[in-house]
Each structure stands twice: as C-alpha cells, then as structure tokens.
Length: 284
Image 1 (cartoon, rainbow, N blue to C red):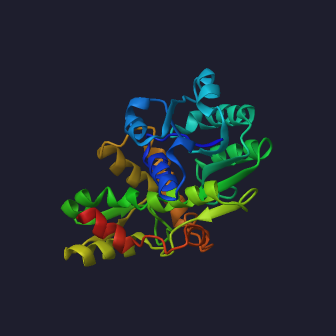
Image 2: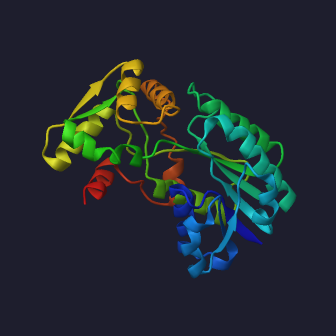
C-alpha cells in the first residue's frame, strides 16, 4: 500500500513528496502523480513511483491510484472545473480502496464569502460522504507576497484591497509538512484543520517588514477592489484570475484569512515561518 500525492508537479505537491521522504517514508511507497510526468521525472531517480493522473480524464485514474492507502488531493487550480475534477478523483480513490483522503481546502471554507469557497465546501461535502477524510484548510501562502518583492521594491509600495484585515499566511513548505504529518500518523480521520501562520499581519505591517529588511521605505496603498483589479490587469495577471484575487483581498479585509487556531504549529511541531523569515529568504 502506498501514499499518493496528486499534482506533484506543482509547488505544494512537490514539497509534500519531499516532506514524506524526509519523514522516512520509503520512496517506493510514495506515488507522485501529475498530468505531465516529464515534470516529475527527477523523482524516478530517487525511487519514487511516478504515474500520470489527469482528473479531466477519469480513465487515467485507476492506474494512477492503484494500491493507494492514503491520498493527498491537492485542489486544482481552475475554479470552474474544480468540483467536477475533484469528484472524479474522489470516486477513483474509493475504487482504489483508499483508507484516507486528505484534501487541501481553504481557510474557513464553510463560512468564507469568497468566490472560491463554494468549490471547496462542495468538495469537502462530497468527500465526507464517500471516504474517511481530513480537511487541510490552508490559509494564504507567504510566497504570494514574496514573489512580488522585486516589483514592490521598484515601485516603493505594496498595493491591495485588504484594509486592516489580518492575514495568517504561511509558506508552502509549512503546509506541505502538515500534509505529510497527517498522511504518516494516526488520529486525523474526520478532523478539520484551520491552517495558518503563527504571526498574522496586515499589509501595512507587511510593507513595514519589507522596509525593515531592505532599508527602503515601502508603504501600503489600500484601494477599492475595482481599482485593485485594474492594477492586476495592468500587471498582466490572467483575466480569469483578476476577479478571484480582488475578491480574496476583500475577504481578507473581513479577516477571513485570519486564524488563531494554532493547528498548523501543532501539526508540524514547530513555529511556522514568520513574515520576516520569508522576506529574508526571498531576498537572498
């Protein structure tokens, strides 16, 4: 029996495979799947089993999930296709005889007002009805902000529509470690984990942290969601993502990306990566 990780060519999936190996799971018991296996062929040299899985092609899933004991279902990236794709993956996990599926949902999926929440809550409901499961409700990624550091330093400003909402962001590596813990230890079946960083921050505080790290004065410019959407469009963000990101910022203004549950810290057994640490790493 094996642990299957979907979307292993993506950043979170790849880090989860690495976390499983770091926790001592034999490579031969880890199955990394992707729509494009050429992107994960490096795992083959390390003894990891690599298989093709495309949720839009259900015929690809029985072979991909064969022998699965536990499975990490990493949420897909296209919201309009997400629920249908997830249902096909869950059905395939049932057919494979999986004993547990962990799903990377979103923070406060059952109460969030974001446009993304219904796709996650629908997946959670479908999964609960069919398999023993655990919900990993991941908060925002710190990398969503550190990836913008070059532009921020050039422009002298962080822009958004979050107001003074607090954001409990953590790194993908933190969330991947949590997934690996759930997949390799007992007592998680039926749990819902609200996962976020220990050190919540506003974007005003994020801008101040960049200033402290670089010695360059960075300000936060708060704007309406419509104005922020125009900024995103002008920056070349794909059209289908613009309303999603603007909507997410509005949710953050209502503290919907804040949690003080401590679930992430407890799962990984260490403090989560701080904003200052993430900024320092990105500037190296």
